[in-house]
Image: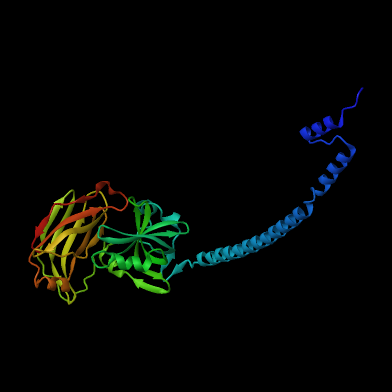
Length: 337
């Protein structure tokens, strides 16, 4: 068999890239081992990349460690900040309240009127039925806290004092709000950032039992009785006026035989034709009677040029915190106290 010519071998090597001579194969092996003379630059580049990557990894690890340390410190700080304070069973007659104990209507749990306290974060400030209230998130549940009267307090001031802040509430348990689906508490004292605020103004006018409200005036009331509302088993009687150096009170007697417990308030109130809002809210249980009244600030009366209350016009708003299905507003009532 005739050997292929050198010219043919060259054509095959050029087409396939495979050397056909022993010397060609030797040169191919050397190029494979040395990179065709480019191995040293490649090695240098690889070393530089490796060093850079190692250094970068070192920086990343350092940054990661630093970030972890900062995060851990922040979490620790939050844990310390949010750490639950140990509670005494009772403080000045107020019992520490577990949310689950009061998270039902007062008629069911029998705890209405109890003096309680709890800690939490104020998540919302709002108004309803002439009240300013807050939603307070405790560690075991949310509470509705009646803070003040919108006729006396400024909601913006209340918000600046408590919104998104941790507070301790001392107050009286009112029952369960079907609207907010939370237990309701009438605040009497609130502590926040080491400062204490008293809210006894609401306690003075919101009855939690069925005893008559104590008169604070040194003057005896001017007796002049007249029935101003008689409907659905509820009778409201105007019983005269009591004056003091600070306010004037239009006395009312409320008899509730409606079959339901109600809180009573006044809406759209005017005195001698001037719109003036009184401080008034009274809880009367079914089958009970309460002596209460519309309290007008003397300064507000004077601002409107009123020395004597000649006539009062208002609508009676009646509601129940636990069941709003029987709530009602009366037609406008006009009477001469």
